[in-house]
Length: 190
Ligand code: ATP
Ligand code: MG
Image 1 (cartoon, rainbow, N blue to C red):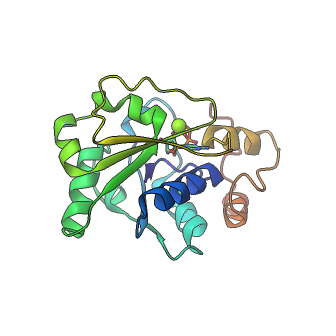
Image 2 (image 1 turned 135 degrees about the vertical axis):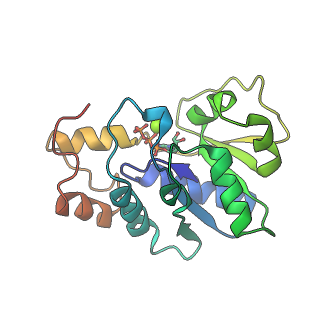
């Protein structure tokens, strides 16, 4: 599951859990982006903070792990690079790329889009009320997965912290504590 995870929240975790259940996945690898090129115009927290929050949030689940492939590669993050790196590390595994339906809608703007279908099956998880026109996406490689509940977004969590409002129960407890410890999202950035 790729994402900026700035911060990781319970929407991401439920989405991962739902996809793992539906597709009987042995493991969900969370892959925080390096420099997210789609968000180049907005400020993003340092990669190490986003990585560590993801580790904290997933530590208690034996099937959830975190990969540094996008953090350790220089330059902007492209999903084709992510999948190639994961495949090289796990040549025998069948890969599913879990991402939000909003990201999936931009899929045709990705680099090496044709190669993507060879590298993985794509699961587009949807927020409540989100409807995707599926036209143009290969039906045999893409599945939409509705995720129950959770109109939670990282931007809203950041805004809440910035406004002095609580994010308890929107993000895992350890992530609340991590945000407080490093005083993330306290300056007005967006
Ligand atoms: P932002 O608000 O900054 O865009 P985000 O909450 O969308 O952040 P990302 O790290 O960009 O978080 O999310 C990674 C992927 O997870 C995205 O493709 C996004 O659509 C999906 N996602 C985010 N929140 C939810 C949610 N509550 N339920 C299901 N999927 C989600
Ligand atoms: Mg988003």
